[in-house]
Length: 198
Image (cartoon, rainbow, N blue to C red; front, side, top):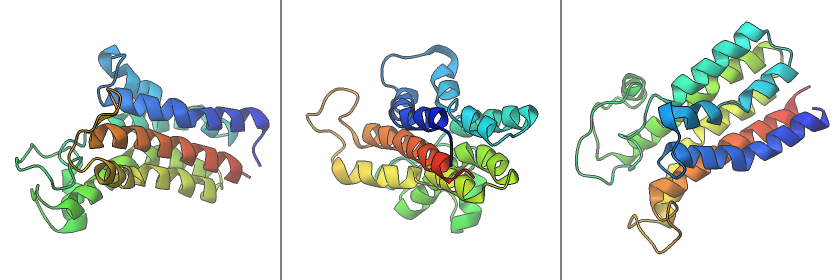
């Protein structure tokens, strides 16, 4: 079981990652140079340090997480609701392999797979590093937190099927709620991983 400081860091990562995920989607304050995306991935570092991963692997995993956030997901966030095609995302070739469908922008299942793939891209690097230290359950929990991005968007569209309601600014659309939930799921996966580290 993890030590208290790590558990505190991971517990704080739920609201921290939730809000930074929302900021990377356009909430204020806006940070320059994609800094919000770099900050979003920071909580993975103490967990990898705690499992005694080599520094160079921690650095590679952190960079892979940031790259995962920066891959984009605009094509998938509507879950088949919008009527205009968008440019293929960087990981669209993986989505095409998994679904057998290419450029089908009206297919919610393909979009859900796309969200899961782009979410997994954020957590796969740290998950591999954590698994390499023998902490397979913790690695699995963190990896699944990334995959839960698909569920975040499904929940967002279930709550806001018409896209807008009279909620506070920066939280009144399906995609805005989904961004908040995506980060919350990442933080929850971090917290679960902390408790699963042996």
